[in-house]
Amino acid sequence: MNDKWLHIVGIGEDGMGGLTPVTRTVVETAEVIIGGDRHHQLSESVTATRVAWPSPFNALIETLESYRGKRVVVLATGDPLWFSVGARIGRSIDPSEIVYHPQLSAFQLTAARMGWSLADVETLTVHGRPVHQMVAFIQPDQRLIILTTGAETPAQIAQFLTERGFGKSQMTVLASMGGDKEQRFDGTAADWAHEVPAFNTLAVQCIAAPNAALLPRVPGLGDDLFQSDGTMTKQEVRAATVAKLMPMRGALLWDIGTGSGSVAIEWMRAARYARATGIEPRADRRAMAAENALALGAPKLELIDGQVPAALQGLDAPDAIFIGGGLSEEVFDIAWDKLRPLGRLVANAVTLESEAILIGLHKKYGGDLVKISVQRAEPVGRLTGWRPSMTVTQWSLVKR
Image 1 (cartoon, rainbow, N blue to C red):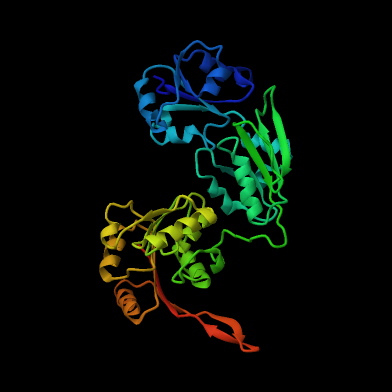
Image 2: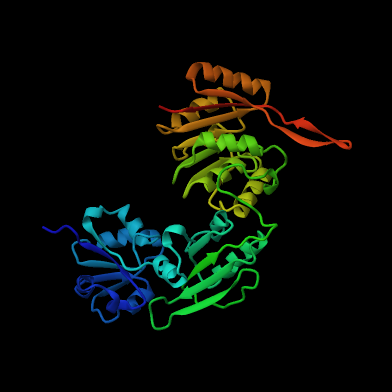
């Protein structure tokens, strides 16, 4: 018995004619076809029950399950498993019940139009997602291909580029690729004024001015890039802290006492799809953290108003925990219990009282206990001298 009742088919601007014979037969013999208006128009010659994307979109799985037992086709654009609906469905329905039929993706078509090697390009999507998240990828000489949300997205990205000193960056918008109505719009970020179709893909060749902001994705951004009341984890200590936290793709960080959000933001920038929840009782600091997250390309930073340890209850189990404020043995005990196996915990202290707690925990649990001392050269009258920052005691360990 064939248990594969669900077919997820990528379709391009050339419609049914662009499908392989086998895939075309799958669509032509479907009993139910689910997709957006554009997908239905591209396959309008097929007779089947037509179903629009459900609203809200999260109801899609329930809609699909209601047609179990029928020959069901979901139409998607391009490759259904590349920033598309196929991945979402495959997380909820057993992949053994699904057949995927990929088509050329917008990334592949754009790379071909631009003459770019796809292996050397950052492929991003802001379709239905915060557009600010692309900011983390603005780098000198970087090539970006971006799936957009609508007609306004290229202008928003042009503004981000210009504000960061990348106004000379070359931008190309491509629409209806592979179809009879394919369009192309070229320009620079600083001068971008095109009105483009709502369904488009953006290619960017990042070109930095001499005064451009350099925002590497490795931790250790300059302190002046963050709004702060002065209590944030400073640049060199932050770099060491995030390194010990070991950002990984899709991993979740608890940032306890998040302050300006600097550690959480650097964590999210350092690995694709890394997530962070910042716990901060002061509204002014949460507001600063939110502004910093938008400006530095981490708009999905979740900020929670609460005091620890009570605020830790009910949160998703983390892969890493940073305790930058609110340190106590009780907070550690709850955090350590919630931390997933192989999770990383880092706690920083600048007071003698907090340091005493870390020394006691180190004796009980082991791990690495270090002191971090930073001195900066600053003017001393007409001369220059070393001005030390407060020494930080840092304790880190991995949950085995």
